[in-house]
Image 1 (cartoon, one colour):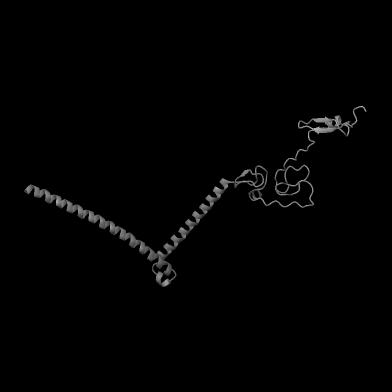
Image 2 (cartoon, rainbow, N blue to C red):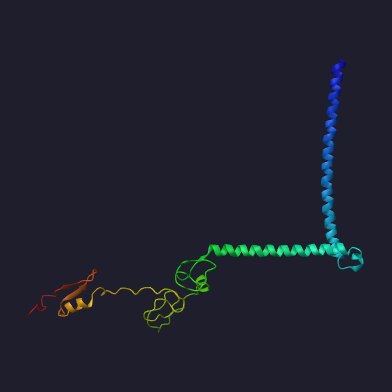
Length: 216
């Protein structure tokens, strides 16, 4: 029984020592947490006292180095914050330029660095936000720009007002009948019907029963 008693006593002593060690670790951790809380509160108190006393010469006397050091740190911190804001603005501008936009005149893709549209030559400020087309006056004659409504001159390939490309004129019903075709049909009577075909040729259809026949 003596041997078993010794073993039991040793186990108990080991358990007690382990418990004391665990308690000590917990207490040291708590002390560290309390120190951090105290430092935080002291920093807040110091900041509030600094703001309240930095203009009082009687209170700052003998502590000029501390007050000057805090002021210098605050100034440098504000400068760093200003530079960060400038970097953020540059990043936003670069992202906008990379995304680009569609030209309001012709729809071509443009980037923020483009000065003119590569598709129609419109300046970037007009291509980015094209002004609404002005109504064409009732008395105006001749073709008008489909983009801005400005009058177009004969033979214009681009609008002189907004730079938009002028659409090709519509093909008339008589298109495809050349001068040689007209010369060949010069002797056709009034009662004969001339129809222009899609291939550029012309078809002559005789008139009614009362129409004069060839040679009469």
